[in-house]
Image 1 (cartoon, helix red, strand yellow):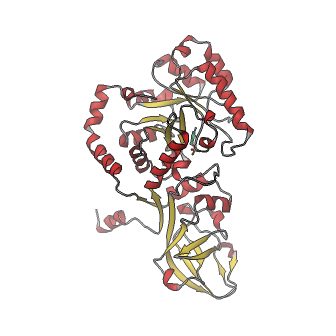
Image 2: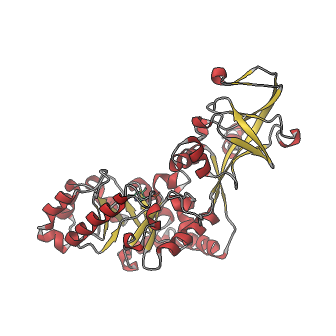
Image 3: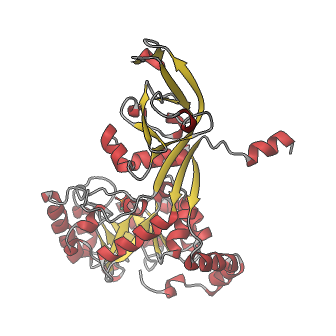
Length: 404
Ligand SMILES: *Cc1c(COP(=O)(O)O)cnc(C)c1O
């Protein structure tokens, strides 16, 4: 490798940094477990690269926190997760089950069956294999409809091999008093009586705040782990996971009445100092932030002015002491007093989307203390791969590790 290529490889541009507090993720996992109670399994949803925050580091953290059941989006993510958590129970929400059945079985990935075709295929080829069954109770996304279930319910093979977990998804659980929640639970109850699953799962993060009759055996928790309080509960017991900062690249003097940025949407009312900060919508800072948020320099707050560019944002730092906001200084965008939820509310964008986009666009830095559990986990990881993994496969049944 040339020297330049080496430098490029080892010096990732750190002008926009998303700090991910893994201790907070761990604390949120434990908090959600406490809310759900000991009878309910708290499964972690780490789909979409753990909401953009990085599947592997997040999954390791959750495993170290005691999580044993995980949901991912698809088979590709399931295999990535299997590589870092060899003994986890892993279910993939959706993939081409018919085509990849062999891989599901080989890597002990639980399929979620979403269609009648997959159901037919499963019973033709592997009726006794464990599977999860997704049913639609009023969300109209993936999942078999109640009438499709009724067709199966008369089949002997179906009754002999019920799903490991019957799952459904609530449409309105972030509005805890919405009558839709009760309607979906009733439909779910009716389906449970017909299907007679080994276990059932209805709620995601927000649904954990509904009464215990909604919780069943397993809750699929994503957002809450990452500090998102979808249901808006007060006081919020979740810890903030994300901090966002970006570097000042340059500061320029702008005379009164001069324009700043695309569309000349902002004109200085006075002689101003404008900081050009190295984050834009390419790094996931929503374009809708223009004129609506501030950056913090130490204890000073400074308004974002003009439009958000692809790689830059302009901040009016006229009132910030110069020693705090010169080139190379950090501008804080998400911090203790202004979190993802505040940003989402400010610009009318969904929190998960903001997290996904920042996670995908920024350089991610993980923070955690080297607590006892984490060290043990590191050790277990080192000693378990790859020999133990091989041994495990040759001795077969991962399900022997128990439970669902
Ligand atoms: C994404 C997802 C979850 C997790 O939702 P959160 O609200 O982020 O906790 C649970 N179940 C299903 C089916 C999902 O698609």
